Length: 184
Image (tube, rainbow, N blue to C red; front, side, top):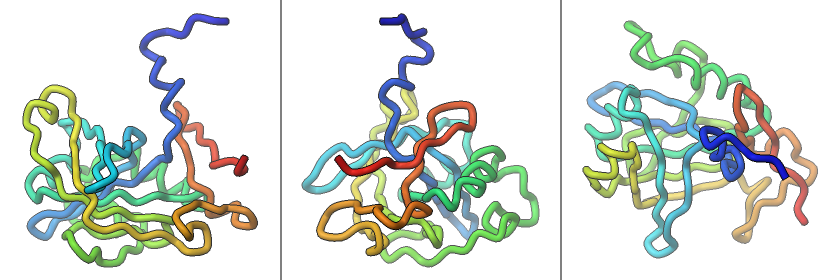
């Protein structure tokens, strides 16, 4: 057994899928990569997401009160790296979607766009928790709509066999990703 540095302890449990958080407010939109996203409750469905206070996405999320969680797949790793490495504030005349040619489609319940070619999408409404948001950058949200690509999700289960390019991706650290493995 080896000792793990406490600053790296999160890597032992941070194996959930990498996500793309999309947000929009007052005609502006943004997207960012996020790995610290977790299911919280079943009925009504709730999630938690950690969004740093300095991000442009958080600014839009807080202003609008909503955001979307998009689950990218193996074939989108380069896009995830691109949008996860630069701030939306760095674009004065455009945004990340236009800059990188990322196609979207409209959500049904919220204003944030959904990223085309992902394998799942959750539309979320923030449950205001000022202490958690301010102290821990932790947002709690109710999922108000959810969708999945029927090629890899049906009857309430993932099934990636035969669709390796559609497997969800998991950021480990330092730009290293794993793809969801085989069902056991």
